[in-house]
Length: 172
Image (tube, rainbow, N blue to C red):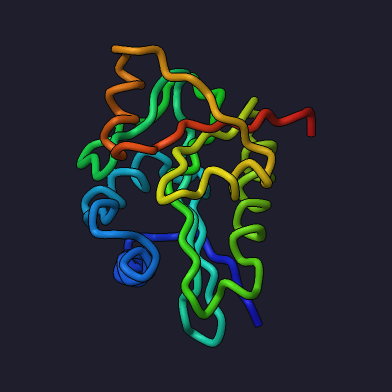
């Protein structure tokens, strides 16, 4: 039976193994970067691991962020948000063994519910590896990052073709 559990530091080896199955080398992040994101959202329960029969099949890492802020790819430090309006969906990875089970949608639903529970206005993400159309089908729309802004510089850390996307959340 599929179980969704909150990611803890003990789950990082499973997260790193799943990441390696799903992303090209230019998108692989260190355990230190994942720990920084988990610390920034400590006690908020925004990141989940999907496990079945002891086998990790997918994960999502998200954290609340202040307007205009998002962690750069492989950022070793992430400051906790002071006045978040956005839940930043930093990473969603589904193993080849889990793809036929719509685990991405299940994890996204968990993130949407969590963002609504927290009273946040939107979810934001950076689409990479040609995933923009997938995210559009999930209700996200491309968003601009003002040229030269800190947000644009962080977006650039994800490489060419990276697209900032947002999904507004209605009242709970």
